[in-house]
Image (tube, rainbow, N blue to C red; front, side, top):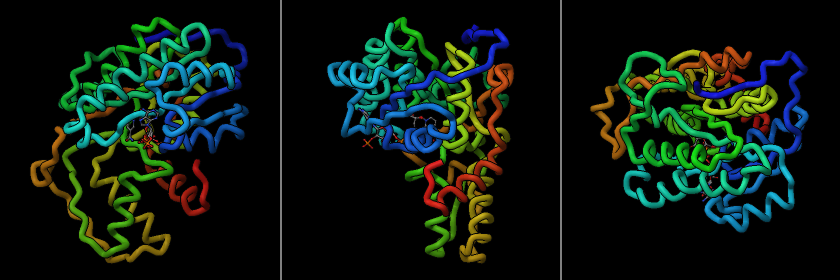
Length: 302
Ligand SMILES: NC(=O)c1ccc[n+]([C@@H]2O[C@H](COP(=O)([O-])OP(=O)(O)OC[C@H]3O[C@@H](n4cnc5c(N)ncnc54)[C@H](OP(=O)(O)O)[C@@H]3O)[C@@H](O)[C@H]2O)c1
């Protein structure tokens, strides 16, 4: 069993006070952006304000904010850099969540964000929360260690695996649009599949999951499956409607044509059955992309 949920039909109300670590990143900014609309009070702490490896600083933040939920968005997320900085990745992604989980035990529910990179990436079918982890990169191994350290701490927790995030901050969609704007020909891999996910949609779903009392492990990602090429093409198509040069060329290539330091999963599609049972469904990634670009155009974080 991947987790539990309170099945009572009572009205779902999310715990009110959230403390976000790693709040300067995409997901943290999105949750801070939508929090007021969703009726939660969210307090963000960036890396500079709170290091997840610093148990004393975490204890002081818990005293100061008395949160019901701590959302851990802190991570080293550059997959290729993790191959070189393995010890640091293991500290931040592997040990940091454990430091946080031990501090939260008995005081707040910890929602820890993990990734499809902990799973085998070559199965040709969506994988649910029960699938046996088998990471194929240093990033994936460090994130799996993070999940294990949260479980070992024994406090109330929810580990949410998500994938292919785009939101406020550097991300694939922004990189593609910037390259297209410079008139570059874009070579984008078409043989890796996943679920592109807007951090704004994920932030809303996290609040729903907390309101449902979900615990254990839960996959949350946008509906639909795409290749990086599909996502790039969709981003450029949307971009041209917003004034981007319409003669942009996006060329599909194989992973073998663009070697990278870290091995990538080829089919890394999260199974969303448990989320659906909880009544949580994120929008399709194409609608999420439109909503994200609209938010960016208006200077909103989510
Ligand atoms: N991005 C994706 O495609 C993706 C996909 C699946 C899962 N996830 C997971 O989702 C979570 C959020 O991702 P994101 O895209 O929002 O990441 P992000 O934009 O890279 O933000 C991560 C934040 O963590 C901070 N950080 C790094 N080390 C820290 C430390 N020791 N203590 C406190 N903060 C620290 C970083 O600050 P500095 O930059 O200042 O160091 C950064 O602001 C992460 O757990 C990630 O592994 C991401």
